[in-house]
Length: 222
Image 1 (cartoon, rainbow, N blue to C red):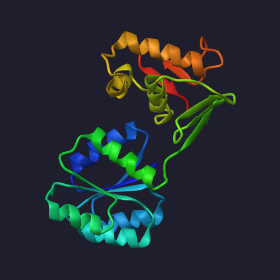
Image 2 (cartoon, one colour):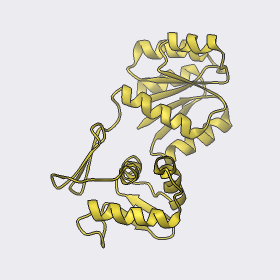
Image 3 (cartoon, rainbow, N blue to C red):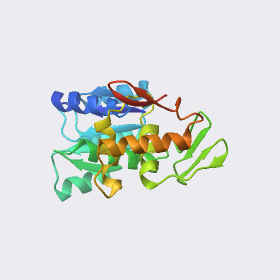
Image 4 (cartoon, one colour):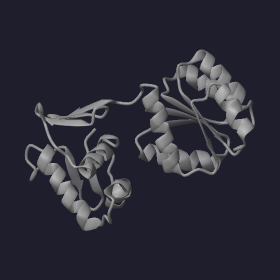
């Protein structure tokens, strides 16, 4: 998905762009209101991340114009965390609001939530006879429903949301840690990868859905 990042802090632009690209987003950055509107006229964006305080223009007026001309959700990024700023941003039509400094994973979660509400996320994914309905939480293989544990399902979702991207073992451990309810170590991850492959692959010994990238991790083809 294409994300327009409207921010004039170069460090934030560089770090956040790199993080979102690793999460599968395409990021275009604009440092002011005029350039942001130009990009919106030229491109097809799924989401706008908009800083309130810009050197050229301001986030509130930019949001007002964006909402008037484009069907795209907006999340405000700002150091102004007081109640007045929050209410003003939401009154301008912003879909969400997050104060700086923020944790990238928290922002990512808020982005996905806004995209879901806007109907811009993929709800059904298909690959190699596998069909995952992410709304109903149902996974089928060659037309037959398969039973996955909560951790197996979460692991599958991580791959589906990052298709074409190599995921390191550390990254996968971070993603499944919260749902596991118990300590998850490297050996446990190996076991769950094996179990998941046994359920979704035609030939678990020669996997085509979740492949191993030696020395780097795993990847689900795009």
